[in-house]
Image (cartoon, rainbow, N blue to C red; front, side):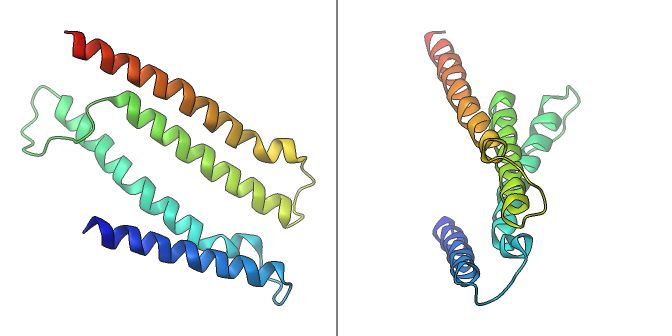
Length: 139
């Protein structure tokens, strides 16, 4: 089942690359936001499970929980990190569309700033999660 899901994501990425090649060759004058539609679909596919897991964590942590489904992710820190990375990815994509579509005269520094923040957050988050895992193993 997971292989089928991965193959669909790869297909969507290939569609995006084909649309990007057509746009760069200047055969069609498409809007950059329209061109990034396959990427928005992938973002939605990445966002939906995290929201579901967050709902499960919140429901599982309540005292009067009658839920029979336990969340796969036990750490809310991981959910916060993942959602932060998705927000940085989404804002970087929007800024790229604005820059390339000449809607806004932005410096490339501002366009890549969310990616820099995401990389720094990934670094700090992975260190914190590794440290928390080491502490839980010692106990």
